[in-house]
Length: 340
Image 1 (cartoon, rainbow, N blue to C red):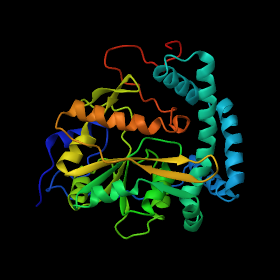
Image 2: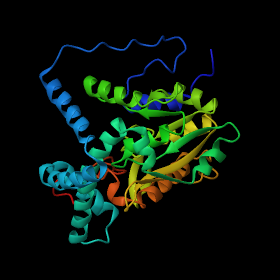
Image 3: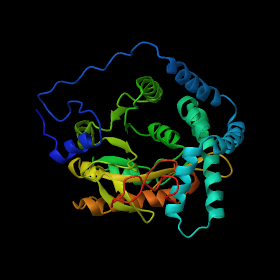
Image 4: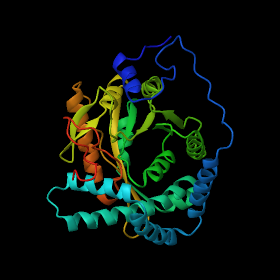
């Protein structure tokens, strides 16, 4: 029947608001996937949005970069709520900067958001030979070292505007499995999953819902490679508050527990856009003495690794996420207007 999953990992998925999918109980059979429902009015907008992304992938890359920057400047004026969230985040993590400096960083971030939409099209529909010609790799030996003794690997990366493109580059070189949280909208989830699965270059590449802890552990124990981006606000009762750029951030301790139970190494990486054109895939050495078994210590170590990656291209980090929404004490929501 296989090894049962530790109770705290089961609680993780339930606390995250994810529907238990049958992975934690050998007695519960897998649930069939729901069939798509009838066409909804909003589906036309969703299909149009994905069609627009497809069109964004067609121009030559230098033109796409130019258009993306212009789009980002436009989005700055069209997206007041994300703009407010990003401004609050930048103020929290850069308390030493004045309002003018924060505003400059905010505008640079929105430029990166615009370019990121074009990079999303490049990730999903870009030709492999084009992508290969745009890439330099630094530190690949760290992945080879991490896998040398047959242990599994967790690829650790933050939420950047080029997140999908970084995953595409990794999938071109490794039999990775990408963990993801299914979108609430079934059509959006189906379209995203279809585009990601279309990029498979090996039979052992696939997607894995973030609640499928049993699947993750089974794969890691076989020496597999999992892609993981854990830098999100975590509301579950098992959350630990560890610093992220000096600000207490509610973080799930379970990536470290999965690494421990799966006997896996955690390898940080980042995709950096080069000034002269193209990209550099930078892989850092595996985290040393990790995990220790102390959830707070291990999660703080993971956050420090994420900070080091963000510091290499801070404008590309997804500052529009409400990373600091859950607070350690009953204080005001930092994203409520008038709080900061």
